[in-house]
Image (tube, rainbow, N blue to C red; front, top):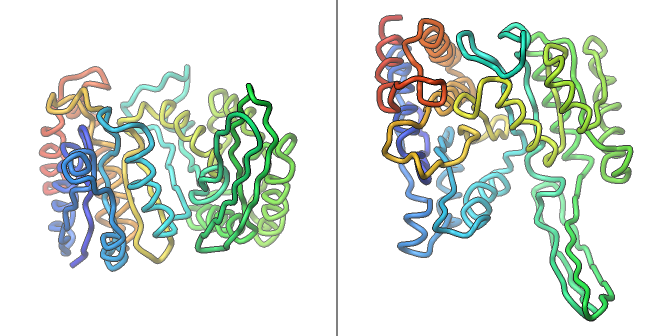
Length: 375
């Protein structure tokens, strides 16, 4: 018996997460285990009704669970950043989910916008640092006269106090954002990338940065990559500037095995990865703290305009569920889910709205459950 927290979230989140739960339950029955789903209301409807976002008590409850399964967060009725920061980012920081793992895998039967590329060309991982860089929340926007502020940053790895003072012309305005990387933070994400390559039998790790311009924050990144990489002599190591890798991921995606990247750049290139693997409806992700409770979700948004229409593609959510199963140690069940999804796509049993078909959201889960049960 595993205990998994479920946060459906907003928009189409409830619809896609229901299909994921349906498929994971089928895999659990097939392979002799069970999942207790603990449902949580955190999202726009709950916030607008009660003013509550994600309380600390919920975080403490989730620490005792085996995993978290998330639908999607975001609603036009709530100003941008409130739900994302106080639910999604809070979970990442409070649970120290420092790995954002994104498989970039083109499944057979799925079209890609890249000419002459197929599943044999698009099959790699992006390992994104998830708790540092420019996403730590240090910044402000000032207008007129002299301004001063002090940031007291607390993280699981460090505590930093940063003082900022600026003289501003009366008719001028400044905005700033501070990126912070720590040696420990760099080391653990880079080591995770090399261990992933070793586990999966992959022979290359590519480090992404912009060290030619942002020399301070990313020179540390490079120093750590060199140090950690030296411990894995059988794995090839290379660097790529973030602007260059967006070109090469399009031209020669087959050259990549594992890409490790700081937080902001990872946010950008994983969306590019989603497009070359067939679209956001097929892009799954994990927010991982190895050996501890971790969170799995589709990387797409909540798509409120498609709520209730049956057009939302739940396959990314279902594939995220397969990642969840692998994380808790149920590898056979995870493989069964992945195999069923691949077979359904190749055989044309599933063709959702985004893939040019008419398979409804709620039909996808039923199709995959039957395929898993039939083996």
